[in-house]
Amino acid sequence: MPFVRNTNDVVCAVFSCVNDPRAPPGAESALALRLARDGVNMGLRGDRRITSEGLMYSFEDVLEKLDAYLALIDEEIGW
Image 1 (tube, rainbow, N blue to C red):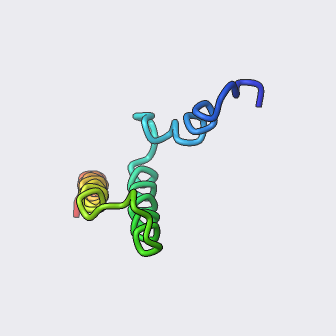
Image 2 (cartoon, rainbow, N blue to C red):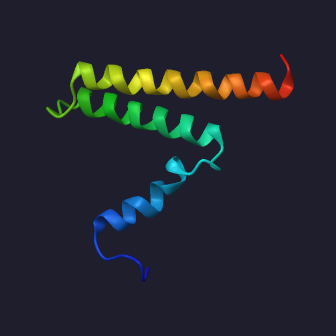
C-alpha cells in the first residue's frame, strides 16, 4: 500500500468508514458491538487495560448506535 507511512495510516484506512457520514448505520453498530465484545474478552483474559467503567462506556456506545439505527429503520419503513 503506497500510502502507508506508519501504523496509524493502516488504522485510518481500515476504520475510515466509521467516520464517514455516508457509511451505513449498521456498519457503525456492528463495529461498536465488536469492540465491546473484544473488550469483554480481553477483560476475561485479565488484561489490566480493561476496566468496568470502560466497558460501560463501550456498551453505552453500542446502545446509542443501535437506537439510532432502529430509529432510521422505523423512519424508512414506518413501523
